[in-house]
Image (tube, rainbow, N blue to C red; front, side, top):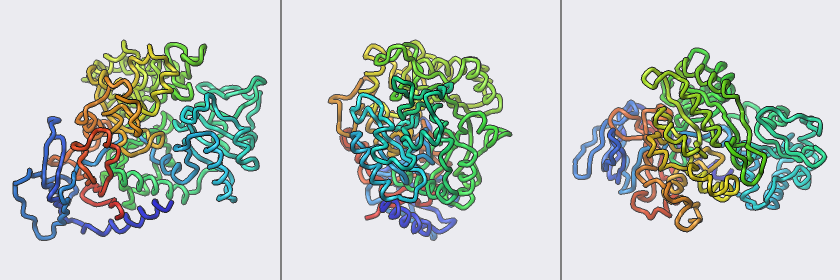
Length: 551
């Protein structure tokens, strides 16, 4: 919280640093960007017009004379890059995690329970205790946690904690009672209540089964939601993200975004994707919503859900889980339902993004895309979110159908041990297969799925290039043949992601938004193992500074 307040103070000051209508000239830059042909271009000077768009870049040795009224930014030889873009994140959830119980860095069940207990003691007036980030695989637990264990930390008040992937929830007995879930409760379609031998709920609810608990949680106040969004925006600016695809927005969140945009408080460009067809109809009944006057907010499409997550065994597989015979995960929709939803959204000119982690879910999404009119007659982008476990036989269909593979490199390095347990080594051939996707002409757009993973895109660049976690494990990289080159990864976090969210950014060429970052070291010169250590000194959006690292 102290860091959040520091960032807020810094960002408040930054609003005054550039006069309205001034051009921004960045000098003495060690600059990198990709040109319109995808080639790397070096520059020493960057000029951004008073409209917030790039006027030109100039190479070292090509003089530029600033004009009266220009704001001159001396990069002092530091690396200057286009603002990085996350094609798939969850903005409000990031703010919620930062202001609630964060279990994402806990390494054991005991550590997580102790943190919940401390939070409870520090918040005696909270009606419910909420949090996120637990991962039984990281804890080495070998099973899911239970309500009884959570009762040991907090017994008198309801506690509900979302798993790291957001596809399962862990509740204590008070929360289960509040939701009126008993041994007689029926598993909903697309969900599973974990039970003991007698059929009683054990405390973990997977995918659609979470809804019964989440429905009885008191909604946050308007002030709390505004604070959560403000915190999330500060985090995004601090790690150099100047645009994001927010995947799964509801009408209330869209209204909050519009309010922030109208007040000039959106410091990151947000391309929102409605969370399902019902939300799409409520938010955008007349078609996609173009970028606002500020260029900070749009709604180009809808996110649909094909299955759950691998860690909670909710990913829908073509064959049984290697570590759970008889279980193939959760199928969220019939083939006919998925095809109808995709066709309906596409016919109304919306981009369509389908969450698909298991190979069966990826195949279903590709089948639904294949049923659409040919690419030349289609209106919008088609995306598969995660494309995490793909049957090798289905890989060529990404290129044939012009599908964007929206991938999250840090998922591979976080999931590596769990994925082998869930699938067995023989079925990993098409898993986290970025080079194979590229070879099959898929368009790669990178992201993090924050707050499932940290929002920092340099963590993603590191994972993409090394196929290692930030402890540089495993030695040599996990399934290293699928690693990207640094230039390929940079493309996926800039041009690739920009195209996926339809923003005029990701490259510093004439006419694009003047979104750039200044970092403390040259990411193209440091050893790959140190990429994750790159820190953002300054973040600029449309020629206006939105973050400066405290010194």
